[in-house]
Length: 78
Image (cartoon, rainbow, N blue to C red):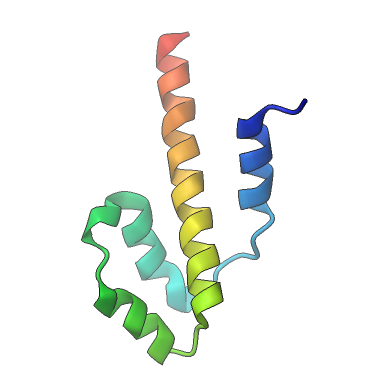
């Protein structure tokens, strides 16, 4: 049975790269997700992004950031 973390990494990596217009939003998700507000999502919708695109990029970014933190913690423990 494959390692669930490896499966999660692979799935997050399969998401197409985000367009530059989404970069500031994804940086906010990556560094301080607790500050994301409805207005951030509405701005992306107004820029022409679909709800599915926003959701997929948000989840991929959050998962990737979480896995980086997990990797850093594991390096400290080892």
